[in-house]
Figure 1 (tube, rainbow, N blue to C red):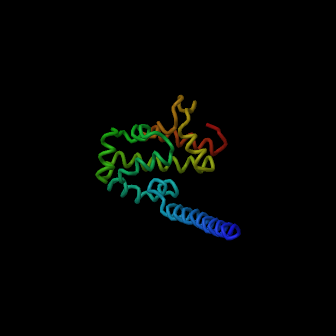
Figure 2 (cartoon, rainbow, N blue to C red):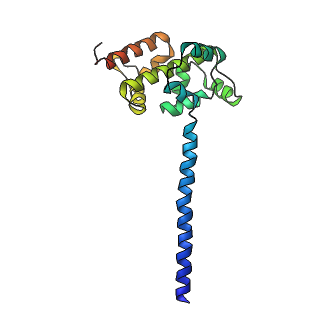
Figure 3 (cartoon, one colour):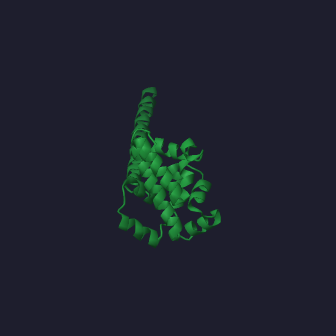
Length: 172
């Protein structure tokens, strides 16, 4: 009788280990599926978009849910993204809830942030160092974080100039 119980325990344990071994695979598979379809902001950052396509995107308006994607990608509070896009929090939440698009000005800022994020990733060889650099106060920008400068084209021009200088060896 004792032998029989031990055998049953062993087989139950084997079954639970088999289930345990199968569950992570399914979970890993789910993650792989999610990674195959990057979020729109990630797509903007991943590759340079032709100018004609950027203009069409801006004119049509970028989906408002990009705000949440930017927050996740850049790992910043929503308030930082709202400030860069010049958008009140209540407006952004309403647009996201109603599945609407951003206006042309905010859409242009999204494209601008994506372009400079990609440039920073190329300069610093990766997403983590690039996003960290974008969020850190910089003496060359009078103590402002590069990300905070992207709300205007002149500010973005300064950030681009700084990234080009860093890429060329740090000479300004």
